[in-house]
Amino acid sequence: MKVIKNINNNVSVCQDENGKELIAFGKGIGFKEAPYEIPLSQIERTYYNVDSIYISMINDLPEEIIAIADEIVNYSRSKINYPISSNIVFTLADHINFSIHRYQKNIKLNLPVMYDVQQLFDTEMEIGKYGLHVIRNKLKVRLPKEEAVYIALHLINAKLDNGKSEIQSQKIIDDATKIIEKDFELTINKEDFNYSRFVSHMNYLIQRCKRKEVFNTDNNLVYTDLIDSCPRAYKTTKKVSKYLESSLEVSLTDEEKLYLVLHINRLCTREDCYQ
Image: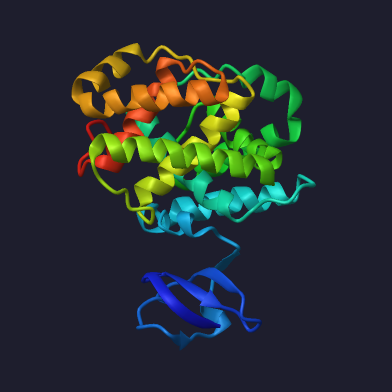
């Protein structure tokens, strides 16, 4: 296996014997300066066809959480009959990481589609419950049962995605990014982890909006605090929300706007106003 670029000490971009690019995990494989050859015995996990936008997530996610997401995705492949991209490992890991932080801060979400998902997607819900079991055993964190639905939704969204919707979603995300760049008078680094997180969130938001499924929770106090703490990001959020509502013919709740404020603030300032 040939290492062509190191992401960190334990993760590298490699080429296999057929010249195909992949992401490889292995203890210490990224210590040397690329390019160089490493034996397959040093590699613990590999991921093919990972979009470059998700590679930047790796440095900002604990490896133990990536390993948990990998275990959940591998389990799901034995239970469902549709293909799953390697990208979901990293978007799911990001979600799990965020869920743990949210749980530690006692921020609760009520998912409007929870009952529907439970009734219509038995297999995905089983995988979601398995995911909570893995998280509890590996991290000693007991996330609420609603998080099983979020894990299920990651799989459901992956199944529902197709080429046409990808093109439409990308245009919406590009337009939203231009609104943010214009408002903050800056150029967003598309290789940055925070942009990867923003794109991931926007993709799921767009898909939920298309199905007329939006969050509506009791986090009004958190939302009010964010408006006061991040006035500039909130001003831009209103413009992005208006564009999304016009493009997708849906009204965003304060809960959806709360997350947009968080992501826009992360994109455009050095320090988060709420973590």
